[in-house]
Image 1 (cartoon, rainbow, N blue to C red):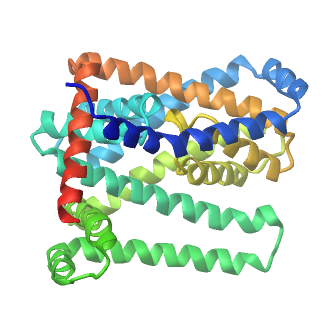
Image 2 (cartoon, rainbow, N blue to C red):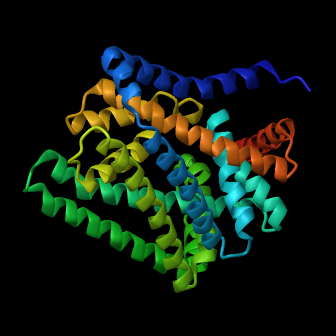
Length: 344
């Protein structure tokens, strides 16, 4: 079936902002980085660091699989959750609009019998927890970066607000049906709120079904937190290759700033935006942009290789065909757009 020109044009326009942002990021990091520093930094990267980086990257995927299994209410086996995460990351590296998350929902929703929408809602919860951890670590480390003692109370206050937000999220999970009923009874004047915001809120509430049990809720947060511990360790080890006396909190600052940076729409695999975020974080800490760019590339390539190996393994293991994956994602997105247009 041949797509209509308006549909192709619409798709191209959706691609354009992310591609432009990545292009600007690539231009910026190349323009403001000393190429000689980049070359010398590449040559200084130790094999022992690369091996340790590979091992920690794999361990991060394992812990992430455990975390998502917990968010799913332990209704799937570990290997299903693990390979689902890896397949999602692989497809995020290849496709725009974070289509890997949608693919993950399709794969695991079908294989587990839980349904695509239910699984997608748990991915939304996973992302919400990530935002909580990223924002918390950033708020706690920013006063140290700026060296402003007056900002420390502000950072701790903001962190306390985030913790209160988690408590509110737990209370909502215990009373999600009442909350859904209340939201559905509201008649918002804005069509954007009705068609874009409310459905996402309903997905979030559906995902909370797996977190009604207090132990389940806190175990999910614990394992997501362990993922962040490993990410902080990875970026600490990277920056300590350059600055031997680097404190551990530098790794937290880099990890949190990177997470917030790659949330910006970009080309697949966050090309350019990932490197720009690393360069920005390293530069704020007083490290040469050229050295930062070299380590940013090393870290990004290691991440892509690791997720690609296990993602491909998962696709082969599950008998997934790439063309069928693209067709499924396309149909799912078209269905969402049709529903949205009908609501408008």
